[in-house]
Length: 151
Image (cartoon, rainbow, N blue to C red; front, top):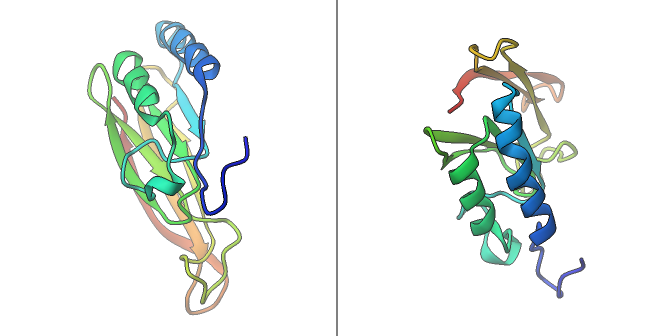
């Protein structure tokens, strides 16, 4: 739904939130690695209120009750790594910068993340390899690699 001028808020809506709350427990019971993907950051403070997720608290309550192994988001145009409470620990939340930003803009240059997830249900390791435009060469290169610990 369009927002008023100078706003860039988002909303999941009651229907989508209800479907998520219904889906997450079944996926957990069957041993699936649950990745929740959305545009707006669910962690408060990553973007200003005028760019935030209006029903973020409802989403955070669902994640606190049912959990997920990873949450991915965009919208902030900058890298963001955070966590939200889940039923058994923290749920990692990863945001990546724009894939089309260039050097010299308001935001960091283009970056993307390769995400590797352990295949076995008991192996919940998540490896992130960040790749982006080099400030020196302008070519894409590996910027770093790290491991997330999923709840």
